[in-house]
Each structure stands twice: as C-alpha cells, then as structure tokens.
Length: 287
Image (cartoon, rainbow, N blue to C red):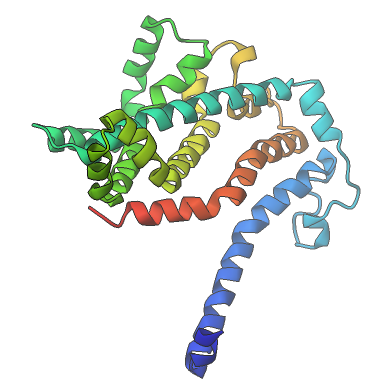
C-alpha cells in the first residue's frame, strides 16, 4: 500500500500499461490451448467448421461430446501410453536429481586439478544437438540391450548439463560457514551434503526436476528410435501414430489426445511455478 500511494501518476499509468500488455500476451498464448480443448470436444466434422470467421463457437463447442476422448482410450489404448510416459518421467526426474545434485555439489564446493576444464566440457555438451549424437547414442543403447525398455528411454538423459549448472550455482550461494560449522561438529562430507546443502537447494532441485519432467514428457524422436514395441511407446509418439499414412487425420481424436497429454505438465507447472522462477533467478546470481 505504501509503495502504491507513493507512486506518481506517471508510474501508475506505466504500471497499468504494463499490466495490459502482459494480459494481451497471456491471451494470445492462451487462445491456441483454448481452441485445442474446444476442438477436442467437437465432432470431427465441426472442428474446422467454425474456425473462420472467429466466433464464440470457435472456442466453445455448440454440441460438446466426449466421444473423441472415449475413442482414444478404448480403441487406441492411450491410457497405456500415458502410463509409459509417467513411468519414464518419474524415473528420469528422480535419477536426474540424484546425478545433478551430486555433480553440482562437487563442482560447486571442491576445487581439484582440471575441475574448471571438466565443468566446461559438461557445459559444452549441452550445446551439442541431439541429432549429432543420435546415432552413437542408439548404438550404445542397443549394445547395452536397453532398446525397447523403459531404462533405454530415460537413462541417456539423467546426466543433464543444464541441471548440473543450476545446482552448482545454487551450491555456491550456500555460505561455506555452514560447511565449516558442520565439520567442527564432526559431520562427514556426505552428511554435510545431505543435511546441510540439499535442504538449501529446494528451489533449484524443483527447477531441475520440472525441466527434466518437461523434457521427458515431450520427447518424440528418441522414443521413436529406441522403442519399437507399441506397448512401451510414450504419448508423443502414440499421438503421431493416430493417423494412418495416406489418410486424413481424425482431428477430433488428435486434439483430445493432445489435450490429455498437455494436462499433467500444466498442473505441475501451475503448482510449482513460483519455485521454478525462484530457482532460475537465484541460480543465475553468481558466476
């Protein structure tokens, strides 16, 4: 209240203009999702019927039906694909947090010969496009007999360079005096890591977990290559297989599947967005 009353008329006008701009941007980004959801509730014949000119029927189905949702679960077995994606994402997030927390702690707290070079190599790896390493990654996965397995889908991604970077930055924000106090009390390095460092990394860990979950859930090319068994396929690949080659897509079912696929990440982000933003901000405060 004090800040609001102290604001000059010019500042209040700028704030209102800023709010209007943010509202306009939000609406622009929200409309495609609203159209996708509305289209999923329409019969296929009505999906593009009210597309232009825009009217309320474009975003609110005049004759809503759940037939598309019933079809993707009963005929296409989309529930199995959702379960596969859930298993892969949970395993990927847990292992990514373990690996990134450990590596970030080592890079953030210890200095040893070649540590800067090694960290630089880790960061350089994050700039290599997946298409460049796709073939050797598949060969290694095949030699380890991990193709057509859940492990083959998530193991190649648990060593996340961005995650290691974010954790390292957050570790450096934790005062070293806490480590020294723990050492005086006789705590080992492992105990210091678990009981002192990790509790102070919650925003960064949530950020890394969310990034890993989004990446794992949205994967398409790697599951398409690494898994041939339809019973092990994930949602993104399953959506692409809804349409037979040479035939027109059944748009209503595609939109229904896309709406279901977008829902878990949307819910997770709505609940964790403040931790995600805090983690990104605090992780970039120290170089």
